[in-house]
Length: 248
Figure 1 (cartoon, rainbow, N blue to C red):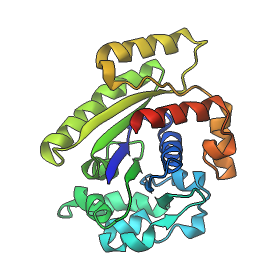
Figure 2: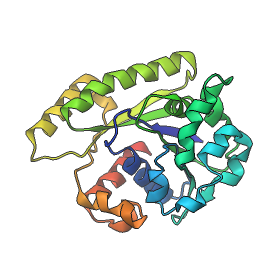
Figure 3: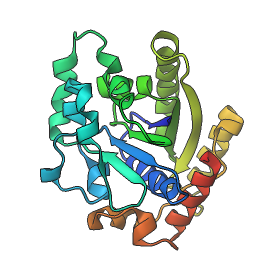
């Protein structure tokens, strides 16, 4: 199973939107895909229509007992796409696991029991805490959504440093899948400048596809749908289809 952590310690950059729509797009190609909602806000679960009363057992229970992974993973409305949901209880996991042996490897142990999947996406929380470290330790690759704004560049260096630390100490196979520019607005000179700066610094590690600022992407979660099901022809959906082809 190829496992990709979608991570950025800055909130509001499109991590969940990226994870949900890439998982949907790649499931549509015939792959069996697992989406791991690893954010206590549970937005990925909401975006796939999983109600709050249907999220247990979920990511929290699996962290405390990796053997529950088989019971916690469930199918979604998207053929070929399953989810490990999350709720607010996951917020307590960081406190409870501090000091526990192999605390950063709990998710990896759980995913080792998830058989039959070709691909997994881990939607990490907007922090560099224990949950994100679990996500990075369990992944083969890290995909970084980066908002095309100046402040986003400042956090990128810190995140790349964390990825290198996890690679050196915990997960030597971890590599950067790439950086995807999100909320891109061609009418905004700053977006163009940020894109040019990121490409100058990281070169081919930046995906060619850029995700535009698009109201349909924002509307879709309120209907419990991925944007690809809510409006396949909108610019945001078309961009995620293109990004999925790059990743595949």
